[in-house]
Image (cartoon, rainbow, N blue to C red):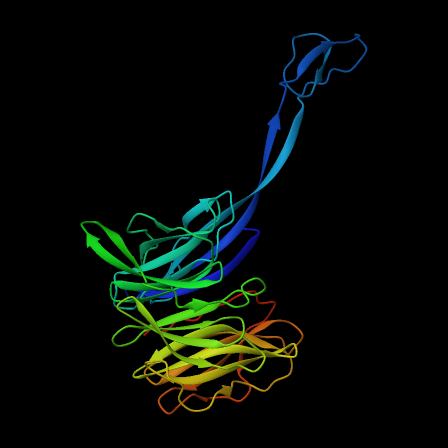
Length: 360
């Protein structure tokens, strides 16, 4: 595609699946006439764009125009545990814009859930079950509304989907039910919204969720602060609020054993930093927030994953003058202690977007 963006990756059934969106401009020629043949003098050349009758003649070319229209796609590609890439698979294609895809799964589950936005009927969200070979294992379901973005989290056969609908943060639980060779997804929307995005006219909300006992923990930004909301039995209840100096964005959440960590970007006077805040499994703030690195330039868009006492946070970093992808290791068993004080370069720029997943 001409424009590839918004990669997401998930572990499914021991392997990994990556999804992304792409756009390609397709040219179509439309002709209003078929052309015609005209007789001319015997000394004149004979132009034959298409066959004409015998004799001296010339061709009047058809009247044609070329139209260019974008085609939008959601693509997927499997990556085996042995590091072998499988074939790229087309999940959805449209002549209207497709929103950022998301995908969730876990190492032991046969199926994950993939979602994407569609704008031909407002800004709806489509979602379906997907296996580790990128086959859609259920029919495609849709939630209507004016969704700007969404995130998924999976636990066993249940997933929580969080999205923004014209400034209101909503959620629904998606349950994958096996039915013969294929599956069905049952959808139950939360009893009430999680909250309101106060700056929805100028910024997008950022949200993420993790399964905790007995429900879900959701971290989301409202354009100013980071909010922690627990969802139990489809009933959201606010747990805590992190008052961020300046403006908060790009929240991501990771839970390891009994504790969680939320990573978010903090922008003060035009400069962005990546902040880590330790939490309890219920979303209560534990201890002080910590800036990941104190380097020149801007650091933002953090993603975090943790398992077995160790973690990794990655972010976009322009300390070199080009937006690059950096990471830092975390010791989550004794608090969020970075294993380096400057981070390490993962990919040279320019970087557009990124994701990280715990592969178990």
